[in-house]
Image (tube, rainbow, N blue to C red; front, side, top):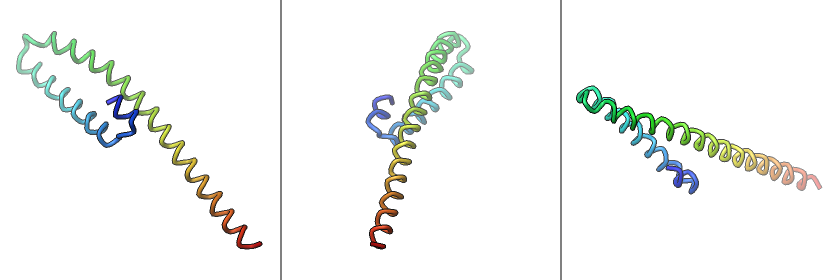
Length: 90
């Protein structure tokens, strides 16, 4: 997922996040159905939680980056519009 975010392939990254959530749901079901495996599943869940925090931070960083780029585009568009309006006056 990190590679997808870095490549700005956001739709695919969202699908990976959805897959991770389904995996966590299945792990919870597995733990309920097989008490003997609860300890192993707890270890996997702890690792997944650490990864999830990292992925959320990375996604937030990319969100900020995209927002800044959109703001710059908006500012450039406004400047272009002002230039066109002002150039017509002269």
